Length: 357
Image (cartoon, rainbow, N blue to C red):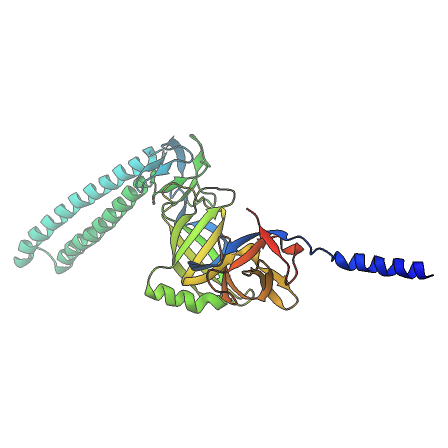
């Protein structure tokens, strides 16, 4: 029995002489808390729209005798697009010119008759009724000539409609009629659609809570917008807000805006969906950390701060806007502190850490 007690005491001393080793330091990746100018942005989806779009239609009936452009071609205002057989309209112009010439000749004769009748009336060789009839003929022919001139102008106008020209500069769509087709005036189906694409609009909606700041920024200058086509790795196109709708959509609580882009390289195409970033303001010298440093707990967002003794402190923070992988910290951190950006799952407050690249 005594031997057993001695053995137990001896064993206890041995165990007390070798205390348990502390857990190894957890490997983590850290980053410095920095200060930077961060833009305050709103991200949404927009739709590319032409500033002008014209559905070209014929204004007279006739047969297409020429198509002077190719599908998808850029045309300038006034460029020829289609020619309609002009022969019927040229004949109408000649007929109107002939009617005018005939009636002018008759007017000249009627005026000569009035001058002659005036002398005869003075000598009472002519009744008053005959003289008044001659004057009435002159006035009637003068009115007829005005009608002839109007008919001639109308005939020339209809002749001009046989040459269909581009009303705006833009890119043409599919040609919807071919050489030899007969077209009708103001047919519901257009001959071709022309969209102006330089410059071009991007329409998008933002929450109405941004409206006061949007109005203030526009009043003070330009409000910048960037647009990137989905799947396009190139830098976004840059534009500025040119239109703010006059009413908030009560159903969605949003306001419609349009931004104008020069679209010099035609990267934006009508009907395309694009990722829109509206820059409202810039937070100067803001405290920022990599977004992955911020964790969310029951009490809100927090970060692990690495202290001088290489242990971590769990510190609650107030997170603000995010931009390109960085998040503004409105409260809770100072510039120069170190925060954990990777390896947080291994940590509890007070854990020892070792940094790794």
